Amino acid sequence: LKSAVGSQRCPYTRNVVAMLRALFVSSIGLAGLSQADAVSLRAHQHASDELFTVSLRPSTREAYSPVSRNNVRPSQRHLSLLERSAALSREHSRQASLGAALNRMRAQSQRVHALQYFGEVYVGTPEQKFTVIFDTGSGHLMVPSVKCDSAACSKHKRFQANQSSTSTPIAWADEPMTAAADDTDRDTMVVNFAMGDAVGQYMRDKVCLGGDGGKFCAMADFVEMTEESDNPFKDAEWDGIVGLGQSVSDAAEFNIFGVLSTNSTPSMKMPVFAVYLGRNIEDEAEITFGGVRKERMDSDLTWVPVYEEGYWQFQISDVLINGKTINICKKYGERQCQGVLDTGSSLMMGPENDLGMILKALSFANDTQINCTKEQKFPNLGFVIAGKTFEMEADDYMDRSQDGHDANMQSCWAHLMPVRDTGRGPIFVLGMPFLRAFYTAYDVKNKKIGVALASHKASTVHSKDVVVEPLVALRPGMDDSAGKPAAAVDNKRKVAEAKKEGH
Image 1 (tube, rainbow, N blue to C red):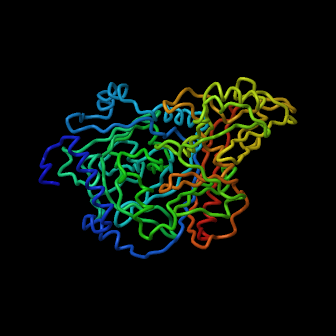
Image 2: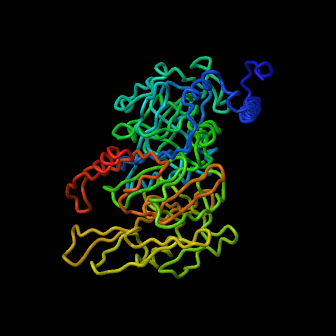
C-alpha cells in the first residue's frame, strides 16, 4: 500500500487506502496493529465481563456544543485562530453539514439553561487524567495539548504526548492509522463552538473510560487542541469533551466508544453505554460502560432502532397530553415524528409548529413562561416510542419560582424550546429533562436505543459486574430570576460518598 501511494497526498487515493487498511485490521485483529498498539493492549490482558460506570458531575457554565468542524490541509494553515476561522468561513457556508443546525440548537439550549455533567477520561501510558463532558451529540475526544499556549489552555490539564510511551501523531483524518512525519504536513481540525473556537491536530494513544474501580482501554484516535478561545474553555471546570455520537466521527478510529466496544482490554460484556441523571443537581448522576445497571431502572428497557445514521435518532409514533393524542406525528407519514437523545442539550426542543401545539396543550399558551398560581396543575407529557408510552410529569418538564411574586403567584416555565428545521427534517431533541426522567442505553453494535423509567431511589445495591465513578453536577452561584444572588449548588458530597463506597 505504501509503495502504491508513495508521497502522494491525493484525497481519493488516501480514502481508498484508509478503507483497505481498515478492512485489513478488522479482519486479522490485534495482529494488524502496530507493535506499539499491540504491546499497549496486551499490557492490560485481563479478560473479563465487567461493567464500568463513571459518575457525572453537573455544571452550569458557557455553552460547549461544537457547532461545526473542518479539516484544514497544510496549505490552508495560518498564524492564528482568527485567521484560520476567517479563511474557513466561506467554506463553512458552502459545505455546512446537515447536523450544523442541530448543533446550533444545542448550543442555544445551553445558553438558556446551562447545566452540564462531567467526569473523567484517561489518555496515554502512563495515564493522564482529564475532566470531560460526555456528549452524545458529537463524535470526537478533544483534550488540550501541552503545545497550546492560549490563556484558556493554561488553566487546564494538558496532554503531554512526549510523556506517553504509546502516543503517535496522526497526519490525516482520512488515514487515521498513519503516523505524521512532521508537524508541517498534517491535517488541522478547526472546531466552531457557539461562543468560540478551537484548533487541534490528530493523535493516537491508549484511551480508557471508567474509574478507580476499573477501566476499559484501547488504542484510539483523538484531537489534541493546540489553540482555544477564552469562551467556552477558559472558565470551564472541565478540560475537554468525549463525543459519544452514534456515527458523526471523522473515521471509525475516532469513535472512542465504538473502538472500546470491539477492542477493549478487558473486553466489554455488551457494546452498550447508559446514562443516568438524578432529578436534582444534588443527586447522583453517572454514565455506565459495557452494559446497564438494572437498579437504576423502574421498568424494563424498551428498545428502538436508530432511524437515521449520525445522531442517536429514532421514531416517535405519537405525542400525548394526559394520555390523549394531539395528532402531530401522522402528518409525517411513515417517518412519523423523529427524536434525538442528547446529553449536550439542557432543554427539550422541537419543530416550532409542533411545539406550539404542545405548549398550548400543556396550558402554556404560546410561550414557555407564564404566571401561575401555587395550586395550578399541569398535565403529563408523553412520547410513544416502540409502542410504549413514556410519560413525564409536570415537574419533569417545568420549573416554578416564587421570586418577584405575591404569596399565591409564581413564575412557571417549561424546559421546551421551539426551533426551526435542523436540515435532517423535523426533529425533537430530548435533552436533560427527558434524561432525568428516563434511563437511556445506547447499543453501538446493534444500532439501537433503550429507554426505561429511571429509578431515583438511593443506589444501595452494587451490581455484580459494575464499577461506578460518579459524575459531578454543578450550578455555580449566580443571580436568580429576581436579580438576587443565589448560592452555588452541586452534588460533590454525593460524588465523594459514592467514591468512598467504591461505586
